[in-house]
Length: 333
Image (cartoon, rainbow, N blue to C red; front, side):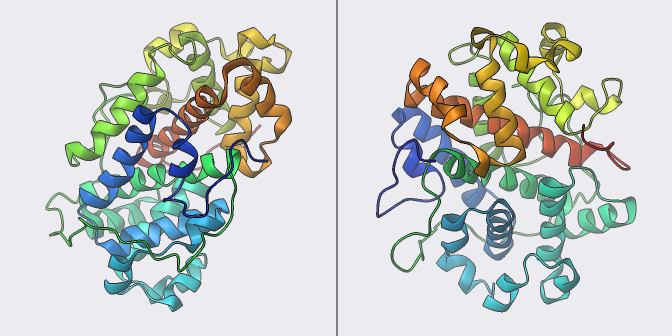
């Protein structure tokens, strides 16, 4: 399924697809990825390990093929890359890489906080800011979901080596406690850990746009937020909801009614929720039956913006769960 064809000289991630959107949206996309590479305290090899691991788990052939010279020079080897998906082989990685990969596994495969001994070890290795930076990187690299769902998912032409500037090895953080949010991750005023402002600003801007009403009504945004928590198996009375569902969303959304969304009329948001569920569960399964009604109603630019906003809801929920939820999540419905 391909909304807009990619070009032979694709830039990173979903940027080729977003290049068909308005320039402001492309700037917002690149701002987050650039911040991950340019404002992090993590080494290039750690960031690259996270990026490649995310690409392999999600099934983005393009992202898995692209290599950054800075990360190669920093020591990420082919042997390590071949073992990214093997938890038993984490001994071939540095302590920082192993800790970051464990966080990526929780973010993508099992969104909950690691058990207390492992969480303490990860925080001591990466520092409070490093933990949050890894999770933000996982969310930023979720742009691959947009490409997988709406564009061509293929390896790039040429060597696949793309220069990245601006990443420098940084001193480890002094604060090694587990980070905390101070409110719902989908509230534009929330503090997402103690990290560089350049990392948080693009997320806050995206969340503000989500609630702007330009692409989806507040009622539909609230429905998508609540449905995301339901698919993640979070019970309505679970205290973790205070980090997942902003008060404005809770006031607008009836969880029981949202479970019945397939019965809704199109003008209430049935098509958007159909796309949302597939993007959250498996973006490779997005097909014309899901996108064509939205494409016909809104055009490609708005469809791209909606898809990216839906992806962001799912990724910020995962970030919040990894930071705040302990114990096993209930099984999915």
